[in-house]
Amino acid sequence: MSWFRLLRLLPGVGDRTARAAIESLAAHGWQPLALTGLRVSTRASAGLAALGALLEGLRSAPRTAVPAEEIQLVRRFYDRVLVETYDDPQPRLADLDQLTVIASGYATRTELLAALALEPPAATQDLAVGADDEDTDALIISTVHSAKGREWDAVFVPWTVDGVYPMARSANQEEAVEEERRLLYVAMTRARHHLCLVHPLQSFPTRMSADYSYGQLSRFLDDGVRRTMQRVTLGPDGSLSAAPLAPLPPRPPVDLRALLRGRVGLPAPDDPR
Image (cartoon, rainbow, N blue to C red; front, side, top):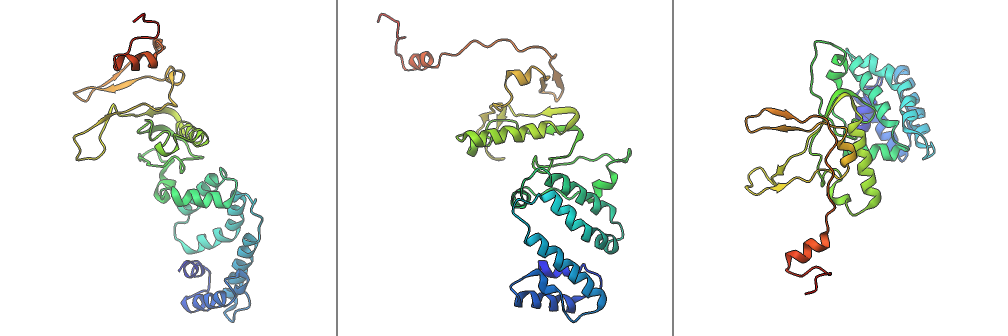
């Protein structure tokens, strides 16, 4: 199906030619160069030969090839096809520009494809044209992975609690925690002018549950980070209350051992009893 959709984009390639090309590919172990030499029209033959050469070059490229450069190579072939195929190609070309920016953050094609499979970017065809229009006001919902390379005037990062930043499954692995820290850093640095980190005071495991737990602010937002931020709370009547930007009061150290001994009724180590 993917081959059929790809081949039908080429000038001069209809259903019959696409099926003949797929049969040739299947007979030759899906080698891209099997697209050349088919008995088709001159117009279709040129497109098939160019596509076959491009895919063969990508297939034989070293694993260390940079994904952004590979995308640029593909675009030398595809941009012209895109312009000839669609009435309004500019939003789609803008999407490809954004894909190139995202790809620049990955070292290999495998890493890029894995990230796109796990965190596919939202379709931005409509937003790409209206982004610079002063009359256009849109809310863009994005994953952190898809936000790499992009910026917005105001950014809201929801649910900044332990268990999400970092993810619970990463909490016991030092390298994974550091990767989660970098991920939150990416989210926070997408903002040009305004950044809002939102975390719940209480959270419910399900929408229908009456049980709740207290939200633990992300360990990445330590005192040093919060000294540069303003705390805003939501009142019972829905009003917002913003505390002045001021240094946090010092916290006395907690003696966990003494606290636990007190909980079970044991005397302190220096108690003569």
